[in-house]
Amino acid sequence: MKVGTCSFSGFRLHPGRGIRFVRGDAHSFTFFSKKSQHQFMVRRNPRDCAWTTLFRQQRRKGTSEEVVKKNKRRVQKVEKGLAGLSVEELRSRRNQTADVRVAAREAAIKMMKERMKAAAEKKAAEKKKAAEKKAAEKKAAEPEKKAAEKKADKKAQKAQKKQQKPQASKVKAPKAAKAKPTSL
Image (cartoon, rainbow, N blue to C red; front, side, top):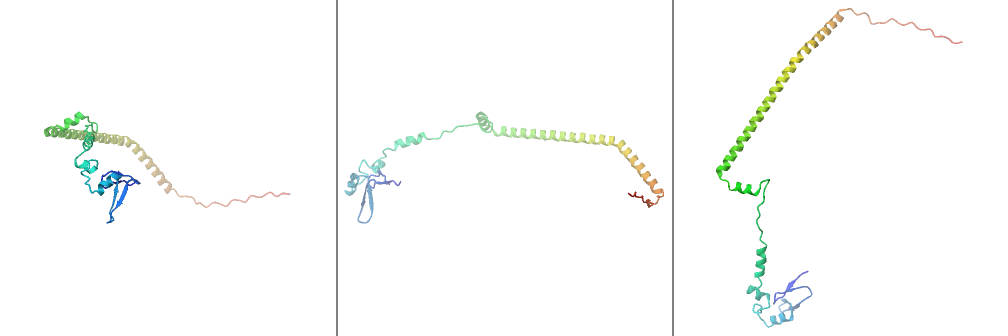
């Protein structure tokens, strides 16, 4: 829906309302009512008529209410906690001096180094325990290893004895054929 404006008064004109006037030079004007059309024809200045929007704009009429409404819409700032920190903690950190920040940073670095050192010591102790356990298993496995070596030696000796004996021929004698019974 296209809403126009009156050429004289500045009022809004909805579709199907108002009067249209086309001048000889093909310039068209729309008017809100006969009153505004007559004032235009008589060549009256709309800034001199108290009921037009131009008159009210020139004298700043009706603008004070709009300014008051704009002031009411201003956004108010609110402080909230952030990432698990309360508002008081945030304010105290914001107001800290540089010396306090440097000391806190150094303390944090020192604490991290201590943690890393403790973790390295723990890892070294675990490696040492694992090495001791492996050595103990190796000692326990030595008697079993010796027993396995003895068994292997015995098997090797048996194999040598078999190779020294002459082998009999593998050709077998033919079997005798069985007689089949005859039926009467």
